[in-house]
Length: 320
View 1 (spheres, rainbow, N blue to C red):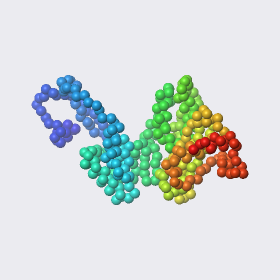
View 2: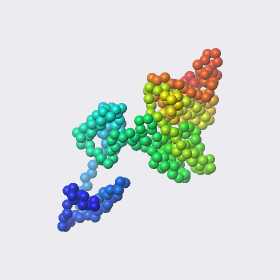
View 3: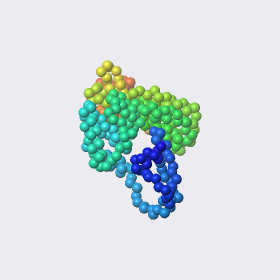
View 4: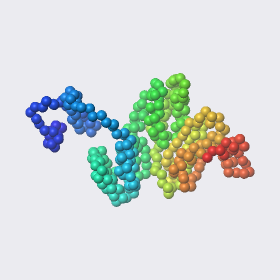
């Protein structure tokens, strides 16, 4: 029993009578354990003087945590989750030891039940990550799959927010969601018809059938495949693996503005390449890359004997 455990550990003790006795409220936690809380609103709280002070900002608390581990390589801090990596067991243990030493010096305490040590695969920020691959957590995908059809714009925004968190796994997402994005435009009247419901269902199916992504490896060849449609542009960055296959690192897409929808096919295909290069700049910079497009006229950008049309060229030359 929880009360007996607390008494045995010296956290509480029995008394015969108390003017400040308060009822308890047991709270069952996710792991099945019980937290004993006291309801003091009719006892202590009623006679306590208010001590007004500014509550620390959440951002300041998280920044403090980042500063504690600042300068330690292969340590990633996101909000209150810390990921420690290492190429070898020895390197990993040395980094872990340094992080724990700093926590001890600064008084930061960890809950053992929430820590995972020396794992080959971890769940971090909604992703499952191992040495070779990264993919969405099943529970998150299931939650999105069970989301009901939205009945108003705010519900649609909430759904798209959950889905876009995994957009790097979803090819041509902007094209698939074009009818749903229209509903979020200013002065657009809400109308959820068969076409919107179809796009809504297909977006869930796309997430459930998503491919696993591989980690970026600077030693492997890079391939950037780009494409454009009437409504958007998209790109996929891949690695050429040792067995000759292409494995995606990330997908990206973007809906075209009203003005860009009027571009010629050549301009849209060029825009798709520029969009892909800018989006994946952190991976491409300083590395050779093969760009794949299905628009043959783009070859004219690099040929003097068959130049592209003057009107297209003037606009494309302004892009940087």
